[in-house]
Image (cartoon, rainbow, N blue to C red; front, side, top):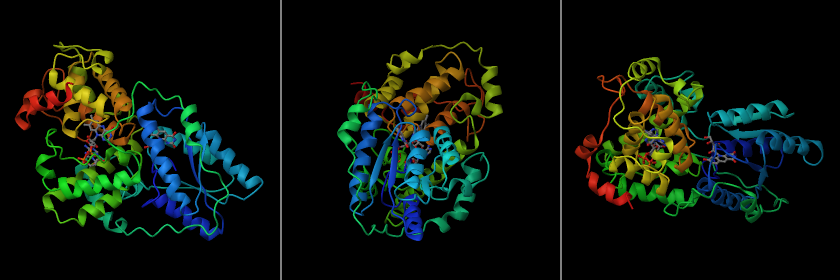
Amino acid sequence: MSRDQRVRHNWALLFARYKAALMQKPLVVVFTLAPAFLGAPLRHYDFMLKGLQEVETDLRSLNIPLLLLQGEPTEELPRFANARSANTINAGAMVTDYSPLHISRRWKSAVAQQLTIPLYEVDAHNIVPCWLASGKLEYSARTIRPKINALLGNFLTPFPALEPLPTTPREPLVEWESVRQKLHADPSVPAVDWLLPGEKAAADCLNSFIQQKLSGYALERNDPNADAISNLSPYLHFGHISAQFIATKVMASQTLEEDRKAFLEELIVRRELSDNFCAYNDHYDSYDGIPNWAKETLAQHNGDKREYLYTAEEFERSATHEPLWNATQHELVQSGKIHGYMRMYWAKKILEWSRTPMEAFDIAIALNDRYALDGREPNGYAGVAWSIGGVHDRPWFEREVYGKIRYMNANGCARKFDVQRYIKRWML
Ligand code: FAD
Ligand code: FO1
């Protein structure tokens, strides 16, 4: 268990249970706590560990133990699996969930090479498995949408129940307090208090979104003052909720077609497009990964005079001349999330006010991964690449600094929503 940290609606866990029954072997769920995960600070580990504690309780009620290994997964997992097959129970197979990120791919290939048993990878995150939706890098939502829609029906199937194991496990419960003691996650990015972690909180968040916010989503989702978005992204990032489960609940809701469609376009097409971007573009988290037309146009304007210039540290401290941008950075630092519309504006201004587009790209990724609870996520890498490098977008009319990259500014925001109200809310 790595990306999809949940018991319900988890195809990787369901497949592992099925294999255990087939091979008449017991089943254990293993999570390996890596010493540092892309620099994630306390905010993320707090959310994740509380979610894992709930996973342990829910699994235990099915007689399935959760084991927490600590250290490098590439060492701990093979040692665990091979030891099991050496003396006590012969481990028959290992099943893992899917992530297109470098770190996950590196872990998996290193583990697979050291195992003496088969390793199965199940995409429990996407509705249409990433490698089935498309076998290549897709150009935009327009090109992947028909491929996903053609297969969606095959995968929007009901989830079978997760059968309990017959005997109570011997494995002890995880010593969560000592895990927390040993963890040295950077406390300067504190836990958030407005969003409770875990499967139950995620399900409550979905229910209240469907009941109170889904209708009107199409119109209000770009208004950061409207509180119209689901706030499901941290739960989706840590896998506390299944996108397939969300999709089926939204499809079954008595809401206007246009609202359901608008939401499902984001949840299914845009989100799976991001996994596609990371799966088939090795440079997904760097400036090198943007398309040639964008590199050319940005290079042509690299010498343009920047009216304002800020360092990474000034951006991080919301120390720019623009109150609206500073408020957006405050929202990120304080809440661990930026409203979807403001996220585009936030990244595009980093492009406009950085020395070079390459520096802007790295600053946006670094700030997003450090503060965003839903960060270190394909959606984030694709989101930054879209904003700064035109990925999944097209050329627009040319202008200073941006070249043909789509432009956004505070006036554009003011035409869409009450900017002063947003600034007041976040410039605490
Ligand atoms: P809702 O509007 O309720 O959407 C529901 C779900 O649909 C989201 O949870 C997400 O899974 C998916 N979704 C919505 N918009 C997008 C999108 N543009 N691309 C892909 N999937 C989408 N999303 C992250 O999950 N993590 C990130 O780190 C992240 N960084 C971003 C950085 C930039 C610069 C940009 C432009 C976008 C980024 N996004 C990121 C995408 C999007 O902004 C968020 O997914 C969305 O705002 C999450 O909030 P929500 O769940 O309340 O959104
Ligand atoms: N996955 C793990 O298997 N082990 C970890 O220690 C771990 C830490 C972690 C910290 C922050 C964070 O945002 C994610 C973390 N992940 C960890 C899981 C992660 O969600 C996914 O495996 C990747 O992000 C792939 O999408």
